[in-house]
Length: 304
Length: 304
Image 1 (tube, helix red, strand yellow):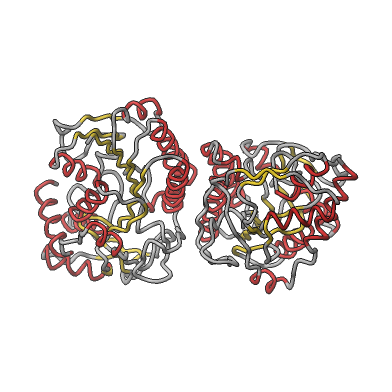
Image 2: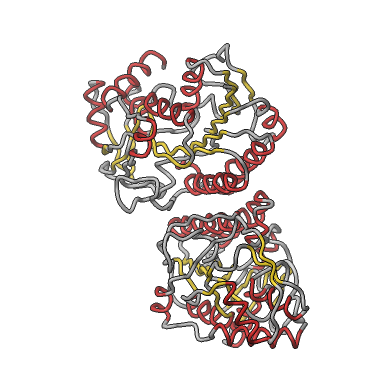
């Protein structure tokens, strides 16, 4: 298939591109910059531009049968600082993208929403896909609004959208631009012998998924006929303090920790219910937290 | 109190202004145009400008203690035609307004959301305020996103927001700019001896509230310490066909009806659960559908 990956030079995107190439697809990448950790791949058709450049975006969609949209200019921790930019750069551009996709009659569209940000503080755990969307960051508000526009276009146009709601992915090549992900950040701090900041007392628990497991589910769901929203996580949770202990055991280093005031945009506890995805694609995550952290630690030591 | 009513020259806004003046408040109105059905009121300080004009908006907020925000550039039936304009004109401007309000340390903010548009097709009726927000029009998506930004600002700034979710209000002075409201539109068609369009077979049921009852609840809730989202409706529902029969009885005219294809943006059945508001302010709607329609019919015959 001819596939466009918007945000294909980011952390998740670059792993997705690898998977698509292995499976024999023709891959085009639309991203605002090149990959940080690797040279451009020979087999990929790169379009380096901004989503606000409508003409280049429309041109990059020519001949495409499937679009993965992973681009975001913000992360939860930065989005509240300038919500208007978040609206302009992420909501407006994605609605523009949906309009171009429907004009060009592209049928399959996969959007990376966020299992960590769209639900807000959960009413109950684990969270299934019917849980109300009560985001507490601009990042989450925009992801939720984009989802609703996708379903609005689904009712009025002939296309088959898939919305993925991943939990917290971690793995090699994370941390390209901004502070992404506690595990990657903490392992880098351990490597640099710097102290680690924890917002809150470290008892908040979250769902983490190793990048290879996320990519496998993304590929299977993207290639399936699934339409709708799907959680993709480990289906389990772990506290920040327990994560630190696992990292200490693996690295042999006990880091210094600064416990700071809890952040407003941060969800306290969340575990995704992944039953819907596991049933539909007969998939389940196979990388344990310990193995994933070991792989990431090895990668950091080889590459940074 | 010094009160600003944004959208104070519209249907609901003009009635709210009347109420505030009767209660002895000092009223300023920010709106893009003057009232259609009345001359400017002597006691009101009018600021006729667009919300995109930040400087004039900021200036109009000087000295204000309470802001009612009722302005919207779209209605559900038009919003899907150009969702990007909806995002720019309603979401971006309202986030800008929230930023100015928090800079100017204005404590009380009342936003007119929509009980008819934010919930989407209800899981169950009557709909209480905890019902998930599943809007099916751009109008509803934007109203829901604005609500979430309001609560985001509430967590990070010291202000006390109230979100009202009215059902379908009707009454004198409705229909200023666009096709607003089935009852007003149908009564005008009856008066003009034109046929009435119904999208669907007329069995869809909705909650209608007479404007005086909505304004009473708006005033009481706005002046109270209520923070959060409140439904304001009749708590009952009526089908379009039953409405037509009531209108025929009152006007003595049996209109010709064209039954057309149901619209995508239209919710099938909804009744608001108004228990939260009735308990908090000891209010309940007192105008029957028949009495409300009679009053509106009299007004149309006198004024148009």
